Length: 222
Image 1 (tube, rainbow, N blue to C red):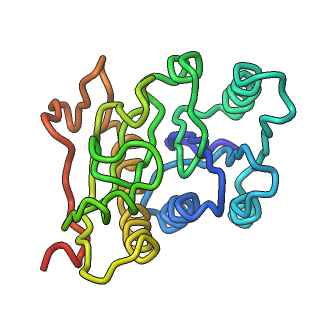
Image 2 (image 1 turned 180 degrees about the horizontal axis):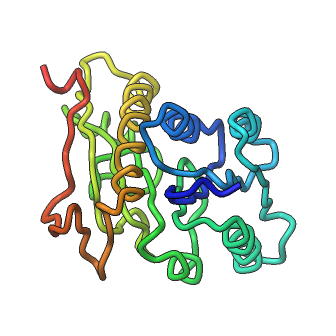
Image 3 (image 1 turned 180 degrees about the vertical axis):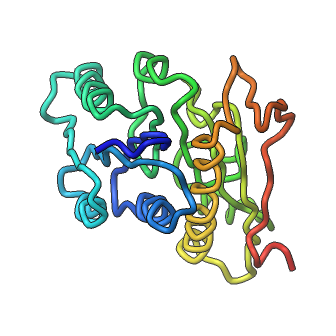
């Protein structure tokens, strides 16, 4: 059933769906005016499927192995998203790279979360790379998706302080907590009509963003 006045969103994930849960909890708590109309994954065994179902979100697994090639898989996923009526597609730990056809189809309404302060460390193993470089500040970024890997226009970031005895796992845990706080905020901007993409420029409250909105996690603010 359509919830009047709410932006319909499909959330894509590949694993446990922790950011999906954070988004769903924000919706349930009245802090985010989205209607989650689909939770889709490329992995039929993903733990996030059960977590999405517990919130009453329609779920779907679209396994790449069931299709002849990437293009066919993406067409099937697009068909499911469009059938759900989604106006926004939220990538929340979806571990596949999309082709130009998918990205173009959802241009301006496809958001991704990446665990680094982009443009630093696109791709994988971001926490290990930040530690190896001796970074004192790490974090997470939300951006509109383009054909460039983790290179679309940035919307917002959270800085997370690197502690002296951090491992990749301990740092990842604090970055993940920051993600859970940040993503609902940015999605609410979009749902409220405050956030939009025009060409390569991000607008927030009608003004172009010269740089992403930057927040600090509590441990980075001391």
